[in-house]
Image 1: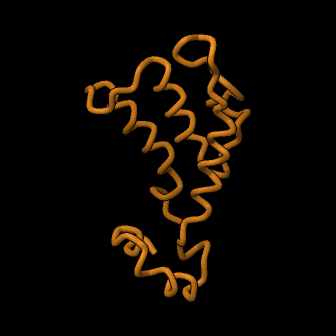
Image 2: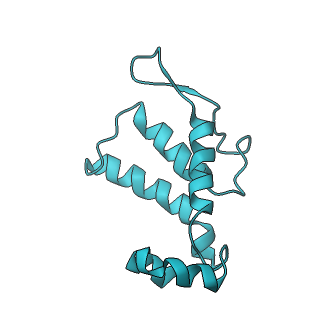
Length: 109
């Protein structure tokens, strides 16, 4: 895995923050910390209790509702693990699904 590959969760967070500042990605004060935490922690080697600490839950918009941040991180990790990538699936699996895989994903495979 390349250095850039290992840091794509960090680059995702930076991109989201930048686009939020410019207004291209309209996330409010409640949404932004949740979305960035989920993006940061979707990598399996990121520990929830290390900096930046990923909270188990956070208040949402009305201050009464909550967002289960760690659960969402886990769901994204699971979905990410289902990706047909050469490091996760043998070539035979790729050949079966290649007609359904987007071109950019084929490139990465």
